[in-house]
Image 1 (cartoon, rainbow, N blue to C red):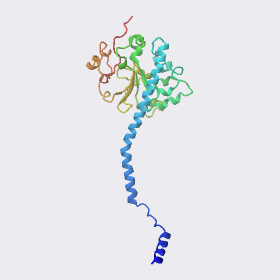
Image 2: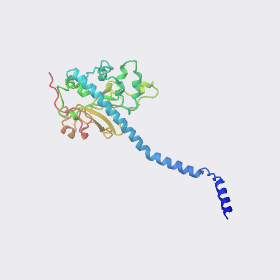
Image 3: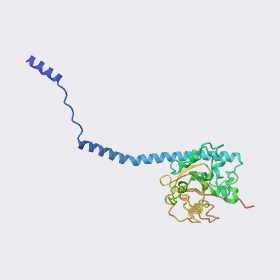
Image 4: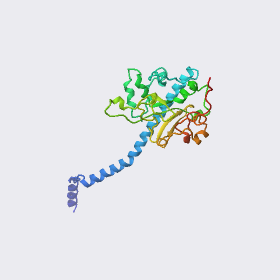
Length: 285
């Protein structure tokens, strides 16, 4: 009896484990299907997370540019950079900041801007005429030009609501809109020499007058910075199909100067508490 048990034990210890069969085709298909379902569930979340991260970088850019504008104001008795783009297209606002105050041109490239690659053309070559349209951000043309340019001294002529008065924002167009038979650089949109115009925003210096600057770069809107250096996200998706009006009751009630007394056609951001200007303009001399 003991001998049989000993033999059985020895044979059991010496037995090799049975090799496991490979995955079947059905098992592989099930695994692949599960992975595909998980990817389809996670992909929208990943895209949103990436878009939110890029939006955060964009807001950081706006703050850094705003800091450079603030330094310029301090050094120039309250004046924002003047522009002479009608005479010299390259003479726009950011050329007054770069490179002494704002040393990094990448701050002018929003990570969601499909044309941000254009800055690579000026590395080591300096700012040329076409570079005026490369910026992902535009400075309010109303502030720079109203009252024959005197409004640009915003230290002297501060708006009533600086935290709600638009100064800097994402600027489009973000799409190619010319004939594909033209050279590549003509497929890229002009951007008002990096200026935000209050009306339909169509490039005033371009004879083709192709597209407005208003965009939905960050999903359903843009990022903006106000005169009071507050940075916020603003929805613009619903604004694009609407006709521009010279007067909006809600906008006027918020103190919009373009609504009253100017009655000038303009985009209205008043539903989100944002205005082109609030308060009186300097008196004409």
